[in-house]
Length: 311
Image 1: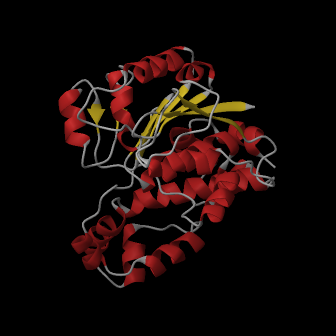
Image 2: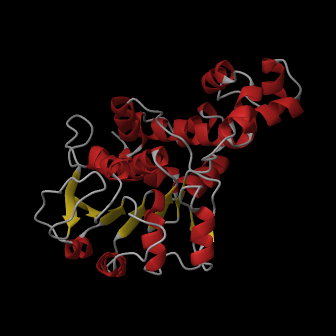
């Protein structure tokens, strides 16, 4: 069973701590045969920002034996990070663990030197401070989360949920992640590249794109272009691009690619359709185009993904 450990330190914000507890800390009958061996790790006497004391037998030294380590957030972005936590995270990564930070947890990873020369994100309000304190980190304040292989970082608050669901998607497949998102009453997938902060005035100017997006999801097998979407919305292509970016933080074609990859994932998991038919139904053209985009986004070829997650 995959061991997932969450670090709890004095003053940790309760919401960011609750996210991994909710996503990984409960057995999920009917979703996956083996979920996560979940462990809260804390030094004796630790209290959260809300004053809660985690009842756990695991200390921070237990992070070193975990397969995945989650740093929910740090108590302060001004003070130095706790040396015992920094050293425990560094040891866990050296031992091969996947390290995940939520919100300001990226400050802990940066203090441990794990983000040197790598892309990372954090809450947009603290991104400038992270970049100033750790100039060797390639801070991107515009995205919800970044998956850089063995290091994953997210923006603030709700983006932590997006990243944790992304971890579930990588570990158990899109169908399981989608079913869990439904239980949590949240969107099944917000791509990591989506903007973490969108000006409310821009969204107001974007109009209601919901019906257009729903229509596009139902017609993924058609040759959808910006011009075709603009005609459907009865606007010019330039207006559609502007409104689309204002409402979603990305471009129409980037959004379409993400939705098509998700649909291909679902078909690979739940059907025995050959790859060429999956490419056609998801709107990704032929098998070569599917393999190219799927491997770039998911990290493995479609056939390998099917072997791992097919029901």
